[in-house]
Image 1: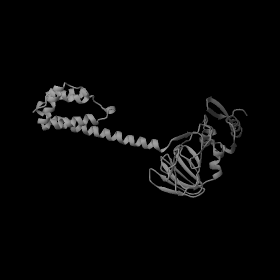
Image 2 (image 1 turned 90 degrees about the vertical axis):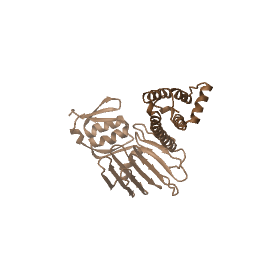
Image 3 (image 1 turned 60 degrees about the vertical axis):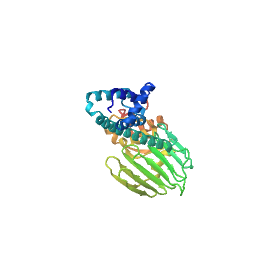
Image 4 (image 1 turned 180 degrees about the vertical axis):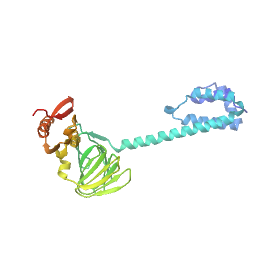
Length: 329
């Protein structure tokens, strides 16, 4: 028995376009008598049932018309063509379904990891107390994500930008920090993390931490007053000692610039105040800046910087300033 135009039209009843009861009965008889036709019918039934509606790239009615056209053009290859077409489309459907399934799992997993998302506004220092009473201080523009309740066996948070961690010790539940391209595991300690820009830094004040670099898989342990610095682009990794007071002063609203060329100091200044200072003269970028600016407003800081660096600062736009040589002698 061969599959005719009427057979295909009857098959379209699967998509909701129902024929009369008599026609449906005739079609069912054909399927019982012809094993090959029954197998093809089952394939299409499975395809239309499983293929996700939201991703269906070909409407069922158009698909049926396409089948009819192909059958009429190549009647001698009807069954072979249908089998090949079904296998191809079932494969595509399976791939789409697998992709959607994996995506749904991933999305559900990501969304279940954290429920709180804290962002420090530009120029703001923000302190957050976690469910385990650990305290995290976010620098200007930094972000923190963490769950409402930690699990019984772990504590995990996600951070972007610069943040200072004062972690409550809990031997049974290690504390993990996920940042841009690396992760940190601790029990109870105080440390600073900064993943802003090309260079990442982890600075340990007390306790002990292990830093895992995602690209290389390297695991590096730090002891108190040691910091790890690495460049994402060059891959260069350095471990060295550091000044704790200078590195973490920002959390107490103190900006420390220790004999830095003005060009380099602008990174810290812009982050601390949440503004943008730009140089319009390359020569003044080499001037060294040295000082501790405690609880100074932006207006006060500008006046101080003009005095100690002998420069003129001019507003260009909201939160944007130009630094030029002071022509008044």
